[in-house]
Image (cartoon, rainbow, N blue to C red):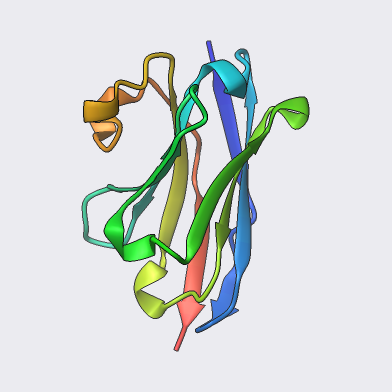
Length: 125
């Protein structure tokens, strides 16, 4: 069983930065694919970024160049550094984990077995 706990979400102004954290227990992040998804009010949960157990990273087009996913194996934590935030980045952000992380499926909600409780990010205009 894997438990994921997110933190770091808050209210920030347009153009600001935030760093979200996802701390895992029950499995090492270095052997797991961890992804960030987000869900805005009234919308479906969508893929944001992932770091595979191979250390490769993947991003949705709308965040490329602004968001960076990374991990600290010693802290068993994955981070999402978010820069140049826009109002459309407002959402609840969830981290998710899967032991497999097949490249063709990492953007799918259904590919992940474990989810955190979410952390809210609000970007004011």
